[in-house]
Amino acid sequence: MGTGRATAEDTGAGATGAVGAPSSFLSATATAGDAAGESVEAAVGDAEAVRAAGLVGAGVRPPEPAVLAALRARPLRFPLTRASLRCWAYLAVGAVLGLVTAVLLLALTALGLGLSVVGVGLPLLLAVALSGLPAGALERRRLRLVEPEPVPDPHRALPGAGRRARLRTRLRERATWRELAHTLLVAPPLAAAGLGLTALLLFSAALVVSPVVVRVLAPETVMLIPGHAVPGPLHALPFTAAGLAGLYLGGPAGALLTTAHVRLARLLLGPREEDSGGRVLELTRSRARLADAFEAERRRIERDLHDGAQQQLVALTMTLGLAAHELRGHAGSDGAGAGGARVDGVDVAGAGADGADGPAAALALVDRARGEARQALEQLRALVRGIHPQVLTDHGLAAAVAEVALRHPVPVEVDLDLPGRLPGPVETTAYFTVTEALTNAAKHSGATAVTVHGRVADGRLVLQVTDDGRGGADPAAGAGLQGLADRVAILRGRLMVTSPTGGPTRLRLEVPCSG
Image 1 (cartoon, rainbow, N blue to C red):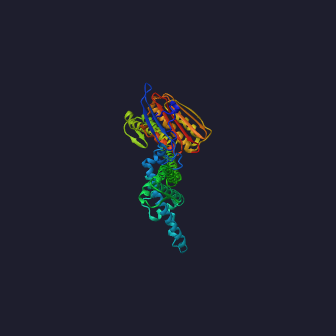
Image 2 (tube, one colour):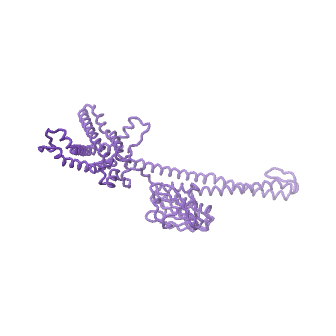
Image 3 (cartoon, rainbow, N blue to C red):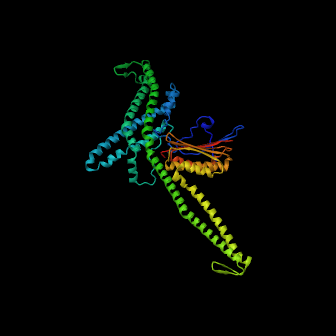
């Protein structure tokens, strides 16, 4: 067969994880071996839309924030690292931006509600609704201060769209309302927490330098704690120790608060599965529609060839047969005469052998044309069967595979135990998978026997074609399996081919019967 894959099922090497991936693909790897030779691997996976990196809810756990990873790696030294300073800077900037944003949004909301009675406030309320867009974009950029992996923009690109179209699209996107929720509900508490931590850090820093402050302000009275004066610099040393402890503990506190920022930003400001779900669903539906249209067009071509050109060739063959019969009759009567010949009302000069030369030559040409027409008719019938066999439409997969096996040059054993008729797309995909496998076995593998085995288990058609050929097939040698991969991908099935050097070659198809 023409392609191959050594899988865990056949070699015991362990699951590869490539089969059943959420996208359709055809891959190959060659592994050098000993006397057994080389094995070439290929896989065709089932089809769903490939999940983009960073999607929330895609079934893959998001990566751990870099700040938390650094804190876990070096918990004691973290307050002394540059990452701790980045966290403090991030939280301080966030506190200022959060305060400014809250004041602006409160002012716009109050002004918009007050002026909405005269219609002037509606644009202001719309601006509040869309305020999450610039705030979310700024937050995603600000995250780069503490997170090396950027949060992707969840919005669709709208190149060339007008202002109204862009506005309508943004209002319909769920990401817009998640960004607004982050701006109104999530950012203020986090900004308040960041502001509190910043104040604590500033107070701790002031305590660290308290001996210097006491010495500079002497003999003025300095009270670091209300009601308790500090007599001198030496008495301020405990406050220095407390300030150092506050700065040290502020490192892990800032890291944990920054981690909360990062995780909430990924959840609300990054792309999610439902953002692209509609586009993926529409893409899947459009691909299915294209497949249905292709199948309908192929059946139309098969019907036109069967009812048009094929019938004309049959009529031509019959006409040539009648012409040959008439010419043989004329040639016999001309041979019996002595003086001349008359063919179709036309006198032919000459006698004997010379009189028979014209009809005999014409008879030979008619016989030759009849043979060529018969050959063209056989080729046309084979072409029609290759486009879509009528037996598959009338009697189902088992009968169609049995018919192919009878015409195959290599002995084929068919063992198909099906409960009845399967959905049309499933039968068509399975049929052309079998024909492709049998074609590859006859052309490339040097097989002496082929087995076709099929069952329906757990609502899936499991079909396997095995030949005893030489194996070592190359999946890149042709595009046949890639076309089958695309067809199987539409039905959310999978196609696996195993072809180690020396054989045997196995092609296994699994496709849901609900396809």
